[in-house]
Image 1 (cartoon, rainbow over the protein chains, first blue to last red):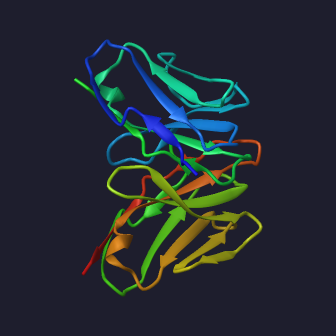
Image 2 (image 1 turned 30 degrees about the vertical axis):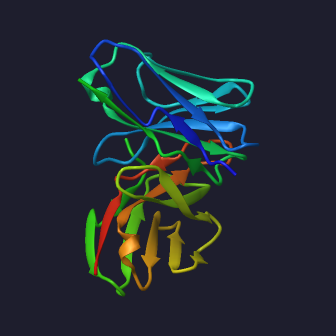
Length: 112
Length: 112
């Protein structure tokens, strides 16, 4: 079975640009969460979606938005990129609640 | 802010030795999970311990949880070079709160 798939693997953007990151959860998993991991730190929660509804949002500005599609895949959008948005963005899927998260390999975003 | 804090920040051991790392957290929890991360890529779920459990084992891993002290420990026995990675604890406050709150991690280096 395929794991959690994230695309792209790496990308470089310029300050002020917009970026869209994509995530496909494990088949059957209806919950998708997004995390930001800055170098040297632990992941920080950004969003959680379940059955296409937002269930939680972390302490991130409105420049960050996300959505979940009918097939449970998800997109994370970041507008007006700042240098501080450079990080590894991780997607995690789960079949139930706060148990059994499976993470993707992440998207490494560099803002220059 | 991060819920969990790992100690030590870094650990270097010889192959075959045991590695122990600790995690402290601030609020009562539903469960606590340990993850491994190799070279800044995706997180791998290692073990989950519920708030009503005190100890769990999985292969060479042993996790303890002391809810009175709000702390957990991860023991890796008979370490191998492949155990070289960063290890994170993550807490879930309640079953209906899907958010994982991570600490800053412990970097473990296993020397051959």
